[in-house]
Length: 391
Ligand SMILES: [Zn+2]
Image (cartoon, rainbow, N blue to C red):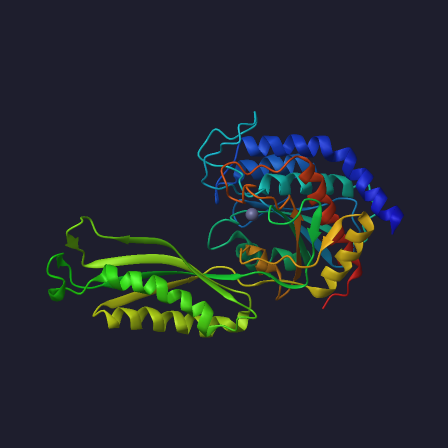
């Protein structure tokens, strides 16, 4: 165990300068979801194992040379896309456009480059596919397109490993928690139709703003009264729109939000409750409602055997292993966790300190040492995949 881990980490150390340079280059030139062509080209060139196979339009899958020829393959996934955030970190390699790598995907790509280059010089018992996935930040997701492309089956991939930086986890901690670790999400949009008119004659109107205000409050009771609190649910409204003037009640009002769950079996009941609350609240105010649901990600469910094996490697590496971390965040990595493949998403702590910027913040900037730690997490996941029994 010691020799193998040491061989990996030494080989990764040798690749770090190139990986960190790649990280800065990717960070300085971010591309949005669906427009990752240049980033994919840059990262593919840095891996240095050929052009790879195009997948999900702007993604690449790169079989690594030197890997074992047979046995099921392990895909190591990193995300290509940046976010529509204007960067304020002030580093010399900051983005100068209105896009920013504010979710750590630049770190994940660099870590994958280090691991892929190191893998050529380390004994790898199972084939590795470096997976540069596009469109993680949008819906419909790039991961779903990768799964539906059939590419993973063609390359006999039975396991997908991912690692994500996480500012809510202590610095130096790494989590490989079994079972559900990220929530499912469904986005919803509601339009309430009433009868607008003069603000001084409310008895002659059907006020959609009052109905919408009541609806936003009532939706909080979906989580507290319809879903087992042991497992929890989140129903957050992120946008409301209505009206044009202080003395005019409008004809309609709209809202959009997301419904998040930790158990797939709660989804039908939660969507039913959402519809009841929307239509019932509208009716109580003499309004009518339109409700549109857009399914996004399923629950991200880490394979328990993979998680247990990865934890052993992390302990061996000297990392502080976290056994608790779960969040109602969502990641399209969830699409790899079930069906034809099993998946393991590890989280790499950046330091859960007061005032530290969150993911997607305009000053979010992990240090370059995060590249090493994400690379080690990917290796722990890969080694776990070579040991843990496939389902
Ligand atoms: Zn992310």
